[in-house]
Length: 408
Length: 139
Image 1 (cartoon, one colour):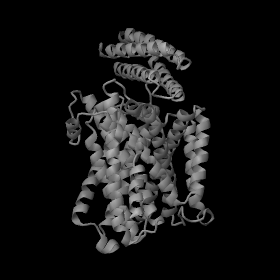
Image 2 (cartoon, one colour):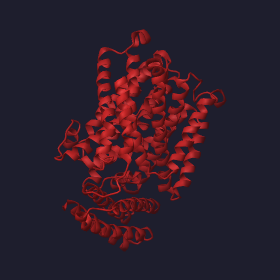
Image 3 (cartoon, helix red, strand yellow):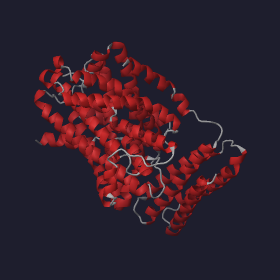
Image 4 (cartoon, one colour):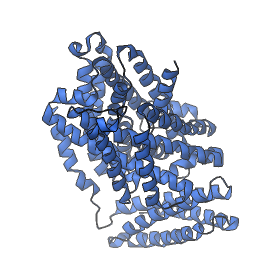
């Protein structure tokens, strides 16, 4: 029971990363509550595909990238591996840049020095902590982000308008605004369904030794943990709408995302928000680095596992170290992490169909999954989401071009 | 899946076009930059107000002001690109406002504990934001 509760809390605390912070707070500032339905849609999608990938891991003990190679073949699978790891790398870079900014806001030291401190913290944390502790430390301390849910209530929004935001809507009058709204909708949808989340979730199931007996735990972790995570993302939209929209502020900096918590709770809000962001994006940096290493090792059938001694899994260990070091080098270039994350989220949506299609195919395969194969409702929902993901994937880059990355 | 893969490659091929910055300023670019600057001014005003109430730490305020200053510097750099004649008066007025905001930010960074300076800075930033927002709406 305790494991289950911790698993759910970890899923909740690990739900928000820098991409979600950016698109939710900025989306709320720009469009009020009109993007809440996208969070609902994205959250159902991530629950659906995480549950499927966790179930496949529990039944077949095969992680996502082994499934991708099996279903798409070596050449196409290799293409997906390269594209996915590019997305993992730039996402990791954005998260590391974000950690450095939070440290800078806390301690006032130079950005590049804080980047080196972030690199040291991540490498030592990843090296010395066992998988379960990594998950729990970052996931549970990421719960400081709940200050935003508390702030959303304290800022007393028009709850009827919040409720209306759960249905697709568009009340703007210019086509240019509609395109920007589309860009934010696609970005937000993609930030919730980032592929590294299922790579990490499925590999984590195998690290934790899941078997068919753990299928109910998988359903509850994905179902309850990600639902609560979705509610936290909605709270971020609400605080963006309540604090920034009336003031005419369109947030472009990670340090701006803290201000709604300050508006609600003053200094206490500032510290809780900074700690929450630190652990949430620290956890995401760990997940992206490990996801990159999992993908490489699983695709080439090499030994892997954070629970195994580094000497037994040299390629896996070298890969996550490489991801962290390269990510830090990218962040060192001085590009705003918010800009990096926008690219990563938009690139990710192009990769999404190639990750989710093999998962859907495997999860519905009765030969592979036996009695644990998808029921028809899950399969139909999976196909609906595959179509939505493909539409998002095809529209992401044109929307990015037409809206100057959402600036209109 | 092959079709989706083909389209994905095609779309990624368009990416360099998305990130390429134009070296001339058109009306849409100018409006976007003015909107960004109005937002930065409003944010400066909000931050200085929170600092007045001691709701943020001095370290946070100094770093955040520095980051706002960098963003404003980037926007100012974009603003200085050549513009068609009809946009020049609007461009010149925007540059004037940005210079005032930039100077205020430089001053505020060293006076984050001076209550009178914070109040004046907050009011000036709010005024600049309002002026920029009105300027964006003019043709």
